[in-house]
Length: 430
Image (cartoon, rainbow, N blue to C red):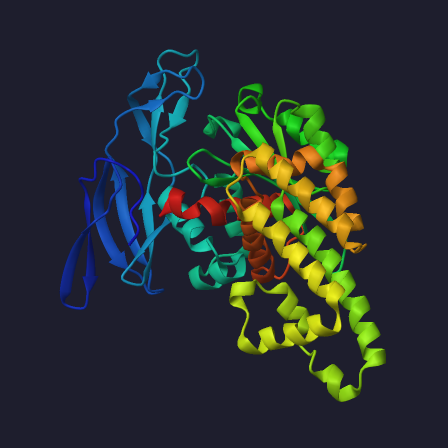
């Protein structure tokens, strides 16, 4: 049984099972157990009464203690015990206010139950815990609750937008997009932050990638938190970079190394495709078969190559010296990004790499070199603290799993709530 986070657990409940009897803590403060029984439906019903002798007046807000009577009986769901669905049954006390005109009465509010809710707080926290890395449909079936009731529990406990008050500093901002449907371009933008502790937190789910949408969100960040943002990582999409420059001009903008690597590796891949087309025309079918698997061999790290892949590369480079040169240049640039270099040292080495490409006579890296020129400072900013969007990419993988598990999720409010719950649920409710 999962216990709610309350103090002062003095009461116990008795569960009768055949001829045996077990006593366990009820874990609810300021209540007295009157009786417990299992009804014909197989439900454990525990009748209790509050031991609190006061409440707060609904009109003046003062504490009142003049007893007036009882409301109707209330039955609410509690944590299951030994496989029995468990309910608490009680009559809320009413108190009369002697401070207000007309002496209105107020029903007592209890710390463990919201009036008009069919569940205790403890049971709703338990449901939220079950939802972590699961679907609403799964929990609905296991707990025999309505689908809409579970969504109502989520709405009552999980904000639909970020609660800025829970953060004192943001550290590194991450902006990236995911597609809600495979094969469609209906992107939503995921905004995250990596705190100084290393914890990754969700800040927003934006409806599109438009610059104005990103700016609107950045403007919603409280000024005290804006000043705590040291850097921002994103890809080379101008909707993100321009929004960051306008709203966070003092923040160090870093183009993610993954996107940089993909850009220069595309150069090698382009040359590979053209060279293989040429070799297919020039070689016999049997000779061309020896080059099978060259694509993966070129993409794999040198230390991870199998003996068969090494053999394939030797054959390929013998037939295409240009491809060997491009392969060596690509790996040389990868080494630069993997070295622990300062920004000035990295700048010098990358410039030398550009010169080496020019001397080689290869044109496959031309597009990447133009990209370098356009995003020069932002790419070099990686070498300041070696920051990447790795935390964003890892976070996005979790979201993709959530989408697959839920067979798609297009409601942005629910998407935010479910991402937040998967990310923080164990910390909050376990």
